[in-house]
Image (cartoon, rainbow, N blue to C red; front, side, top):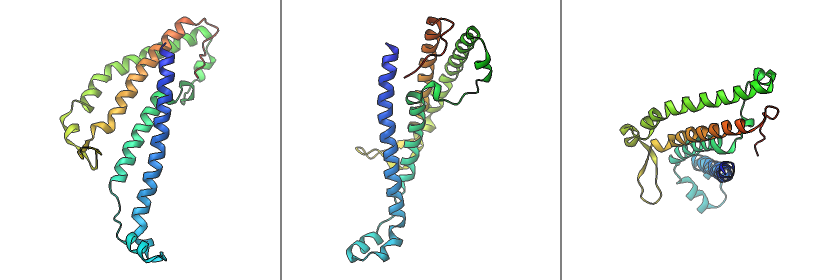
Length: 191
């Protein structure tokens, strides 16, 4: 059941990541256009278009939006989209070990990861979500579309908390998978 939930979350995260990447690209092109349109306006053959382009001011919020989307894309992508076998790993010792030792190493590694994440989670939560400075500090030129309020900087770092939670869940799942499989089949294929 947990695998089905993770697969569905992975599909949703893939769609979000693709949308974020497309938005980053479009906003980046918009940023380039507004930055250089004044200089390009003198070469426009249509007078109205030339006048309109010469009056365009560079958009300052695009840099912040791209940064926000990029951070979310990286952490959500790492949480849900990238499979465990696709991460960079230095596994020379792991691959050289016999299957039983591999199983122990996998379980021990997952336990260590869970412990580190659980130990650091309260401090990370306090630093990101409970810190008054993170609430007061705002992304200067980026506003919520409906209310017009500036976005608190804590929402830039929120996906790291999601990453921590997903790593804990994935590690717990990995332990259960390892405990259920026999010694010969230690490599679990993720789809």
